[in-house]
Length: 292
Image (cartoon, rainbow, N blue to C red; front, side, top):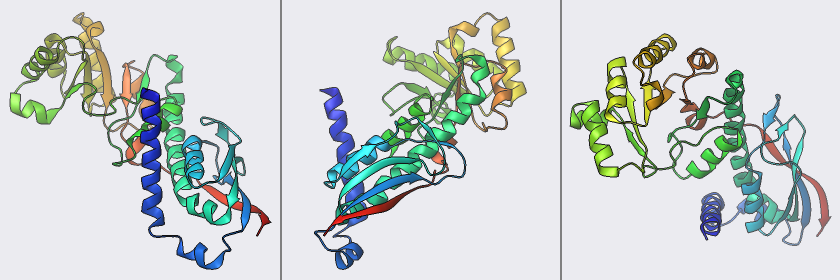
């Protein structure tokens, strides 16, 4: 039932995306094409570099909603080159054009996120999977499911899908309790042991306090690589390193991620994966007029 509900939730989102784009109708196509014209089209990768394709399942659902048959030619997660054909579509020309932009927008965005995620995963691959690359909740409203799915396809961790997934104590929470220790103890007291408690910290002392208060995960926020190294060495020396997972967040880029990885944190979370993805260029090309 859960999977079926998820399917209908996604389908409803895609319908709303189509409604947003179509409005009262495709005035251009409706005034220039015959309603009886059928066609065949293909979606083609146009990137100059290789990319990881993602979003084909969702694009297929969009074409299905618009009464077009479609066939994916590669799987989500496949590395493709320029001119790779990833999907074949047949149906009324009006229907294909109705679905075109919405389908392409999702493929381009999700492929961009998956591609960028894979770059970060590959950058820390030397540590043989001991470091998880994660995204954040910095997603466009309405696109979180799709953005986080793309991160997962790229080999990353989705972290929190929503605020009810786990406790994550940040600076604005600590503002009210006035201490890391009080915030962590209060959260632990109220949620029990079955819900994970994570705490954002900005200093070595607050990291130690959070671990001692019972946090499951410590987020070292905007630490430099040298500060991360020093913090991990100190909590290891105190014998508390294994009591909590260590997450690094803030200012992580492909240029410095290896420097952070050297200290072997458990998680490196990167907001840019979903808040600033560079879209991968795909286009839909009509290749055959079947009849009219």
